[in-house]
Amino acid sequence: MIADAARLLQNVPYGRAFAGYLADTGFDPALAAQLENRLQRAPETNAERLADLSALCDALLLYDKLYVLRSEVPPDAEDLELRSTLIDLGIVEEIDVAAHGPAIAGELVQFLGAMDSQAASPLLDDIAAVVRGGLATEEELATYSRATSMIDTFRDGVEARRTRPPVDPSEGDPLAAVLRPIVADVQDFSSGSVFSAVSTIRTFVYWRLAARLGLPMYPSSRRLPFYRSITQYVDRSLREQAYSAVAEAFLTTVSEVYETEAVVPIYLPPGVAIFLDTMRELRSVPESLLVVRKRYEPLRAAFRRLQEDSAASQTLRDLHRNRQRFSAVLDELRTPDGSTQAVLETSIDLLPEVVKAAANPLDLSGYGENLLRRPATWIQNWWRRRPYRLTFQLRDHLFEIANYHDLLHDATRIRITEAEIRAYARLLEDDVQYSSARRPGPISQVGGASS
Image (cartoon, rainbow, N blue to C red; front, side):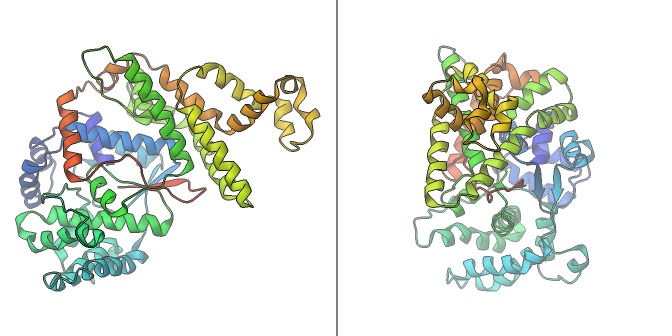
């Protein structure tokens, strides 16, 4: 995800030309040849890269850190400015998960073995070895002799779109139906389907690691269909629900502005829209990243506090009230009208007397005249919205973006046509019904797991 997002910003060749580009940068010739064969059937596009950049920007606004699995450094790594900046700033961090390898390998083998397929049996040991060896430390890796080539491909971290027809999960055990192609792809190892098999195994590993470590998972666009297949449904954390409500309001506004236009604009979700708007002004990837991260640092902290407060509910009544208040705020966030005055009013809690009153909310004298002369209904609304004022400010910032329809081109000099976007959307629909929702992390989680 991170490398492809960086490649979009630098207008790296895509489609079949991408394999040639990798070969020129020193990518293993044998893997490059297999990759070129795969790209003929599932070419990489700038539309897909934009989806990856969007998911990455969402995560950068919502979470303090992004954790990734160990993988080989891409051959063009030194040229990818966004990737280098994220690592240098300590935002992206490799996470050591070697201790979880055996347990996750056991889970995958158990799932595959449950299919009661004779064809799968001889391959289960090799598939388990891919997981254990793929997560092993460099010192431990020397002990793995089985499935060496597949382990190497797993550690390369190459992301592949499935080359086989999607499986109908309604047939038999849904999870087994989703995982069955892994065995078929491993059987056809030499045909080039190794990319699909090992990439799918790696996605499974991401999913299980995210659950074990309590991290929200942000899959790349190539991993998303399989991830959606195995999770079936996704509950979202407080921060992601609030953020999605902001996105809905913004989408509504964009649609209204352009409803009479002949050209349908590419809808850019909040994170990537803000990043590109900043980059359009600063003309620098590192500077834009720093500015956006610093500007929305209070927002990340506020979302974290909201989740902590929800987790701290002592009774079911408290939890119910918190959910009711949150649901009401979501409805307001989805309404784009009258937001400016709302932001001014919800910022009243920054006043010194209100800050002092927070220590003793039952002492009305601490609130001062500014608040006490307000009507009772206003105070109720203010109290409900108070923790979310930064989210309202985020929404207003989105509404103020000028020349929205030229945002991508102005920032990157790249144009993606409506036809390219629609073709990419159809590709996602062919894989599995797509949803932008993602599995949440635990309450108070400050990091996200990114593929």
